[in-house]
Length: 136
Ligand code: C5P
Image (cartoon, rainbow, N blue to C red; front, side):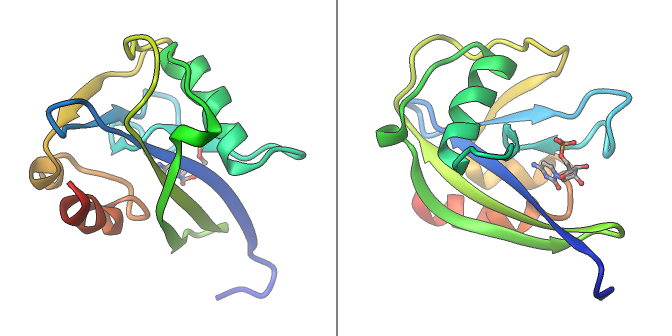
């Protein structure tokens, strides 16, 4: 691993519905890793906690609202990409208001955890699947 490789902190969320399904979002054309399915979230901006990032991103990307108390940390991904090392805490959220709606042209799907492997994901996200299968 390169000594200069920086750490990128991204916060991700497994939204869970009352049937125990998890929401995944397809990265739109024009973004790195376009077409792959991921857990919603985004980069932690300076001054934000990972929970604050999710509250902001879930509102911006999906039009839903939640609170810090509704975000339970589950595990984190740690993956080396070519130009950075990604550190990505995964939170689980079962309580939110509103109906997730694609606000950035992305496709959305509610999927049972044991079917998540049918959807190609970025290499950082894939190792998170067993944690969701165990939990749900
Ligand atoms: O979403 P965004 O493009 O800001 O994320 C920055 C980088 O983090 C992506 O290019 C991708 O390499 C990585 N990422 C990931 N899995 C996610 C979100 C981001 O591997 N769920």
